[in-house]
Length: 236
Image 1 (cartoon, rainbow, N blue to C red):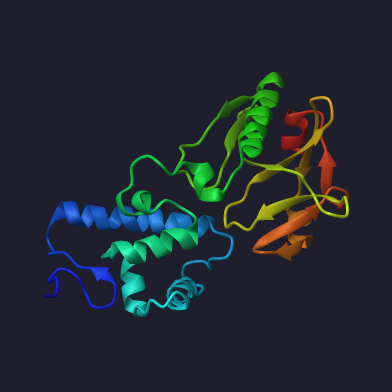
Image 2: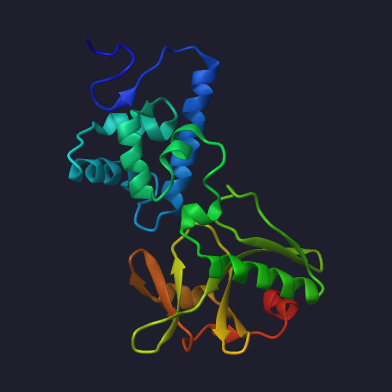
């Protein structure tokens, strides 16, 4: 016998008018949209996102209507658990967190951040404080920012990147596309517990080669500048 609370196209419908259910739907939509925002391959909302998700599900043999996907993203319904599992796999997050929230999906899970990346954030925060600035860390679900800094009454939203070395020895930063403007700080690890810190300009990011939804910026590119003072670098 069919479940009366489950639609034919993958949406778990529930009786309208229940404020708790409405809140659950809205919370699910907020998590779903945030994961999609953070994923480098998912188009922006209004720019093909719904069709992208529909096609991705279809590639796994799951056929859902565009209207069903729209309802998930708008907070009008939640998908069946199996479909939510496919969404979570596609967005690289935990299925239970995507459906129910709670703990288990900190910022680094959403973005695939490594231990080295987290260490670089702490390093930059410490250097800013040593330079006389104040630092705060956004909530884990804030979206994109790694930290915020304050110098002389001005606030800066910062994204920290760890340099990668390609097979041919080129040192690069992979800057994920984002609708949010940041000060991008790059950290290059050196032997003997040494490091170099760079500020990466928007122009360098815009000019970078597009690779898998990110901008590939080389260490030697114009607009990548080594810094020795955060206050001067952020104010320039």
